[in-house]
Image (cartoon, rainbow, N blue to C red; front, side):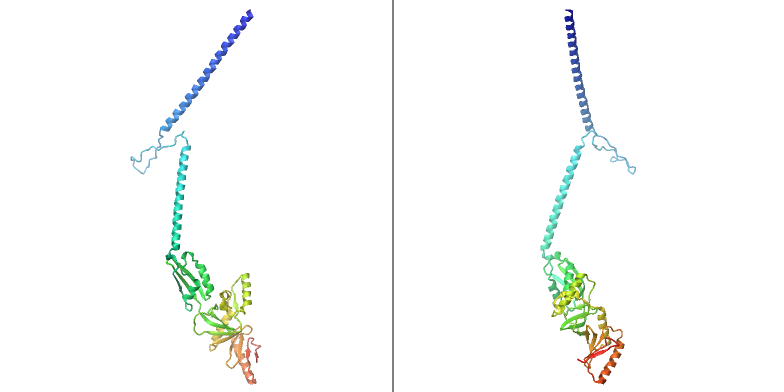
Length: 361
């Protein structure tokens, strides 16, 4: 009986104790929630107050100006310490995007305007060539140059002065120092120096002109009296420094040269055969000065230069005129001996000073 009462008392005591612990824990939990709520409300209230309150920033006063109303401190808004920094960045990005878009529109408008201006100028007759003037011509007429170029009516925007110079150099080998000027008043000015011939070279009824520098010129226009050279061969040509392909092309021209009726049939011929050798040209000029009464000289690819003697034969003195006086004296002796013997030669060669010879047929 006593044991039963003791057990009941113990059980009641434990129950009361458990209820007391439960109420205390509930109280602590409620108190913690209230403290957390008050802390959050306090932080929110403080943040709102800081956002609404402007922060003052003072200017540094200038020592060179009097203190006026404008030099006093003025408030400048600043980003609050606890403000959200994401919002200004978004606004900045949107502004930059709008600026970029506006520049794109402006560049597109400028491009369209530029294209329209170009198309208008392209179609306008004010920018089409109406006159081609060539300055420096003497033997060749302007109509011949204009007919080769055929520039009338073309737009000045499509012209290339370098190509025009190359076309003129190829079509007119007698031109040098060619300059092409394109003016916006639909006019083209071409200036060139025209080579003037001083020697006429006749080979198998083909005629070439040679200027004072030894350059070959096609026979065009009218000139006065010139020194004439008759030959069965073309002169010895002088070629500028060319690449291997150029040398091969020249060899092909040499192979076909004898089949041509006239070198004037191809302007490409003058592109490669531009000049005779300086030594041959100097010998021609020197011989013409030694015998000015001879207006016709002879040329042989083996015997050199010569002339036709009035007594009925041809005389050749070679390519080198350095010892022309000695050759002339030897020639007079040979002629006297032949006439004394009654021999009428057809050719006398003084190519070699100490080994002259003559032919009868």
